[in-house]
Amino acid sequence: MKATDAAKRLTNDVKKHWREPPENRFIPYREFAAYSVGGIGISAISSLFTYVALTANCILIGSVFNIKPTHLAYMGVLMGIINIVKTPFVSMLVDNTNTKHGKFRPYLVYMGLPCAALLSAVPFIPVNAAYISKCLIIGVLYALLMLFQNLYAMAFSSLAQVMTPDGNERTRLLSISALIYNLGPTIINVLLPVAAPLISENGLRDITVYRIIFPVISVLGFLLGLWTFRGTKEKLIVPKNYVAEVSFKDGIAQAAKNKYFWLINIFTVLGSLKYGVGSTLAWFCIYALKKDAVLGVMNAVIGTASVPGMLLAPVLARKLGKKRSLILGNVIHGIFALPMMFSGDNPVLFFACLYMSTLGLGGEYVLTQSATADIYDYQQWKTGKRIEGFINQFGTMFTTICGLGIGLILPFFYERFGLLDDYNVLFDTSVRTPIFNLLIISTVISTAAAVIPLLFYDLSEKKHDVIIKELKERAGIGDGE
Image (cartoon, rainbow, N blue to C red; front, top):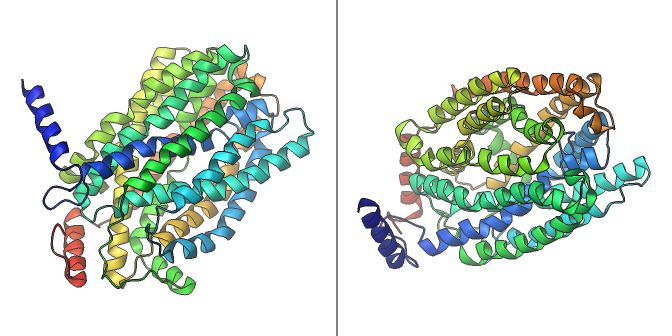
């Protein structure tokens, strides 16, 4: 009866506030739905980008195109340099965007279409082309994709941060919408491995699989993402005559003086290797169990590990604060990753440890995005300027520069352990086991290191509430307006 009553109250609340938000809130249910459901398409396209990543763990680029791990690492360094060069221009573009559609929404159209087109093109690179030719074509397409996908994903994530100035409402939006729009990656992560054996006996190691699925997902994802563009609004707390105008020099100087900008990005850099245990899943299913379909099932199962963290993120943020919640999640992640070193011959234990380790980081995206939005508000409170573009893009520049060297570490050891351009060596336990142990150890070390900068993060929820109150007073806006 309690569940039934709750459902009725929710239904009535949705009907009542479909077009107009509740008192002291900013997001009506119509916008909530547009952001969340339309986001399924946007996140689906973004998740396909991970299937063309320049890493040995990427089955398409590594196992299908047979590109050496170190060569992929060198290509990654080159892409990092390109990323650094384009960052100032993207920052200027975003922070000086003034359109009737807002600051971020236009990019859901202008960047989404080329993303869909380029992703559809990648699988049609000739597999039997000369090695250098393959590397060049992959590199060019990836560089273009990196430019468009970066802006596309940034526009979507940043949109959530400006749909409401209320910290608690923002965290709820990020929490619940993430649960919904992550259905996009979940569907793809299940569809690809399960459908692959039905398309080809070589499963995910056959290019035909990608040539069929990539274009379909890309087109459908882009079309669904248009709902987010059409059905949402940006609600910045700025004076009515405010015009976005930030010079390159000012943008750099202001972002550089924001200590929270540095702390959250150092946290990202130090934690860049903590996702290594997750990358073992595809290799474990394909090369250890030799069952592609199991990968689809386990992608779905492991994917549910993120659900509790996403749903509990608003509660944890209120009870513990974002800082303590992030520390707790990282500790759980590291504790359960370590036993995976001793579970290579026990699939049940391997999957159980991976599930619990993934559970630890389930709410991290919601919490870090919410914290980043707080940092934007702090920046405006301190300087009077909204510089989401500079903070986001220079954060990307900083993490990219640091990642240039970090990205070479794992591929160096891969080749020392025997993984070159023939990825079939991963069927050999003597090659696969030390690589897995390397990924697990690096995960534990990276997780522990990531906690350190969080110890100095003191932008609490109470401090943010004061900031928002003062911003409203400056803009002459009352609560709930």
